[in-house]
Image 1 (cartoon, rainbow, N blue to C red):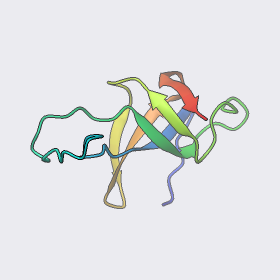
Image 2 (image 1 turned 180 degrees about the vertical axis):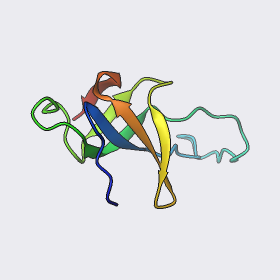
Image 3 (image 1 turned 60 degrees about the vertical axis):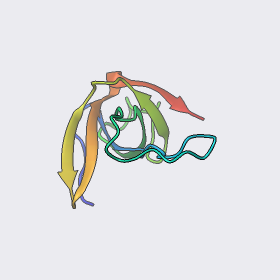
Length: 89
């Protein structure tokens, strides 16, 4: 992939939700489910100002944050740095 976000933005790949409960019950794909609000940072736009996040970090972001984009037949999310709520260690 050859994409670099501009300004104070990051490119995030959403994590897929597990389709199985803790007790082993399989949830069908057609069941209504929300999009996950966690993902992995794929690219960072700004250099000095974005030291809080780096490529490979797992982040939490707001439910309705960002803009979805398709790159190389994969869905990504472009987020403003302010929309990132935190980094999961």
